[in-house]
Image (cartoon, rainbow, N blue to C red; front, side):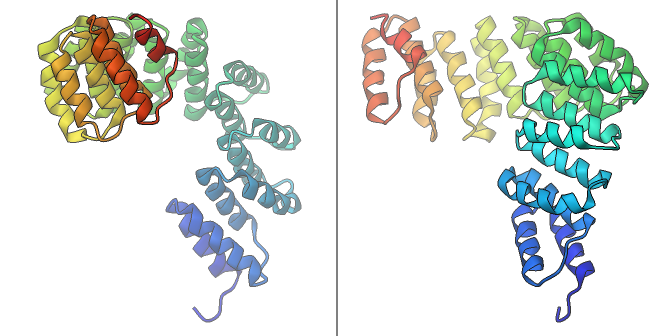
Amino acid sequence: MVHKDVISWSAMIGGFARNNDGVEDLNQFKGMKRAGFTASQATIASVLRACSGLARIEVGRQIHVHVLKFDVDLILNNALLDMYCKSGSLEDAKLVFERLVYKNVISWSTMIGGFARNNDGHEALSQFKSMKRLGFTADQATLASVLRACTGLALLEVGKQVHVHVLKFDVDLILNSALLDMYCKSGSLEDAKLVFERIVYKNVISWNTMIRGFALNSEGLEALNQFKSMKRAGFTADQATLTNVLRACTGLAVLEVGRQVHVHVLKFDVDLVLNNALLDMYCKSNSLKDAKLVFERMVHKNVVSWNTMIGGFALNSDGIEALKLFKIMKRAGFTADQATLASVLRF
């Protein structure tokens, strides 16, 4: 393009932002500035979106300077707020939020979501109360964030109060999945089952949340039953599903079921979390031969992998193999942690 103007630059920058190409988006913005053009609100909002996706807080702070000339622009300030929240800079986010003359539901939801994502559940709930006091009505995004805060704090009673607000968005899958997760992680499986059964449209995330809930709460048989129901309903298990099912097998010491799940694991061959779960299942089912085969086949190992295998030998009173593997672990450049040492010090 021979002649570019602000509109063409803005369109190009917006296009890269919409397609999640943050790096190119920032490059185009630098090119626009070098060419002597002044960015509009829309351009700056697109660039802030790119900074959020890339977690480039320093670039975002430089963009903040441009925002000041459009001080009361709500869309732009919300984009700035979102960038700081997603970059984990809550102090900067709070300063922007408190300075906002006009706030809308998006402003409140962004701030509440920022606290919830950064594990500050108490502040998220405090902001939610302030939002309600000022007469704002929570939307799906707000409620999903509040439920995440309740989950992190294990505040079941507050979560149940939020459940009342969720009912008006009855078929919202993201919101129902967040509600399901909150009940499962709070150990309230009966409430979780009621929510799950009421979900009209389920997806893999819904099934995974329910299966994980049963597995985490030592309801291995129910977790396996849900896995069977999931397959019957035509859903394909992903890594998260299989990890949770293996956790259930580990708790029940049902080796044969674990071996059946192993077949599904093969399609996700290099998934470290999944291979570690498989390794743990074999070790705790006393099938060290299978565990060794999985361990030796693993392309990528981490401290958890080594600990699981060493712990497997320790659990099965094979001190010689445990100490031998500990020496190999150190030679491979891994640093022992408390779990490693706890297993080794048994002998």
